Image (tube, rainbow over all chains, first blue to last red; front, side, top):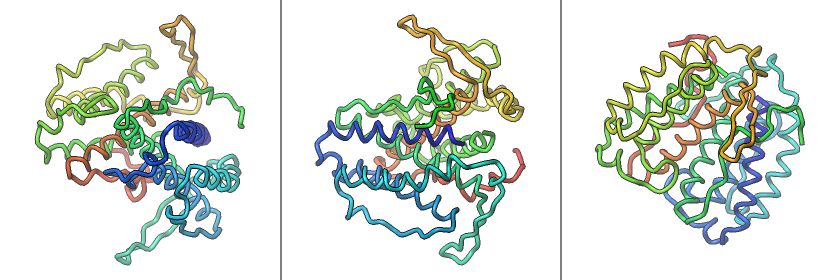
Length: 161
Length: 161
């Protein structure tokens, strides 16, 4: 589990660096699909990861609006701030938490049950999926995307930044 | 590990169904980014998953060319055929395999070492990343993409199709 999170954090950092080289208007431009833009996607990834971790911790989740974070610096700061909440939860994860259940009432009144194991993997897949979208937009504006390769990042070692 | 594979297989099947509703010319059209097209992406996902599993099993990998698989039916058949090789390996995966090492000589002559744990996660992330790309192209042609949600798919249960 932890290896995937470290992968996502590393790739996210590389996308933040990628953003430094791209005009802000391209980062903010409305695009088709996903949440509709490059910086908005990075904001969304950061927000969703933190929100799910907060839910599992039983701590308050508030809904951030991208309207308040429309610069690279603001999204990066939010990511760093939320990381302080997310990282200890991920590093302390053990298989004992797998079967914990979270219940959610949907708009139609039905109750959906998710295990924490599913939620942790959902958060991982969510980020990778949205990063895939960034890679298309990156090529559309003529810039090489960040590599999505999980190999050769020394992730199997136990070093944690 | 297995939950992620079952997620990917389920989502892939939904994309194959999605393809049934889309004109073949859209599936084959050259697009910007990724491997350059919708059906080509699905072919690539299938090919890469199988190739890595073959490598870990120490069995022959051959390089398929998309030129020989330019219909939905052919890619689906290849996916089903390769699944017979992939599925047992995934279902029999245990944490004992995590630290097994695969060595690869790169074009520049360097040796890169990857653990099987890294390879298994690379295959997972690879598929999710490329599916994210499909979701953008799907919106570009005005069709709703397959949901990437990992939750509410009953993946925590131990049922294996």
